[in-house]
Length: 211
Image 1 (cartoon, rainbow, N blue to C red):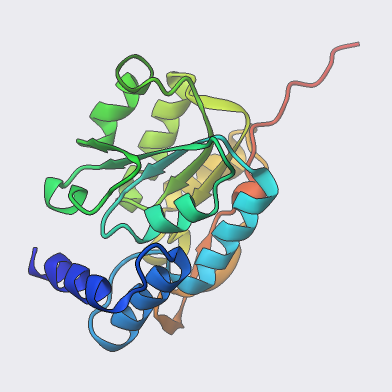
Image 2 (cartoon, helix red, strand yellow):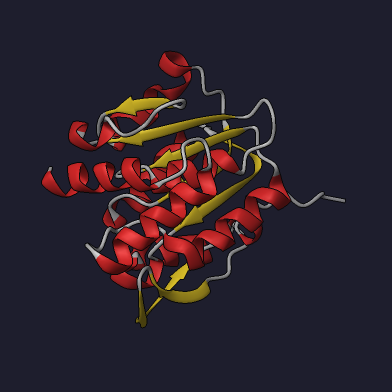
């Protein structure tokens, strides 16, 4: 808890209020010079921004709020009228989210009730940056509860380090998705290789027409 309090205090003291880019830069300065946080970071963040610009989703689901870095990144790139839902299992971290629909609870318990309790009919865009071992389970939950819109975009961070091998194998072999890992470095550690599975290339395939 001390880590998040110190980070929040630093951001509040140094960031320009209302300027999401400067808020993210302030997070980055903290992570480079004070304490590492497991957020998407600037390099992979640019991939997220590019995909958001390309897809312009109206219903976005984030799995893993943590310190709020990804939430700010997503919110500042959304088109007018879009809605962002973010799920955080740890109530100590959940307090950082504002101006979004924050849902507190374990993702495996929240996802099945997103439609009836929170009004999310389906998501055009999903950003996964929570427990890596939960990626596959939660993707399957989104599928089974029909919460992915046709052609939905999915981004998954840290698929190479610390890694989500079962998720990657499923995404590549199940026949439902187009996917390609974009290699990058671990946030704030350029010497450690990592990758992000970008949504521009992981969209549910449409059934082929039978002639």
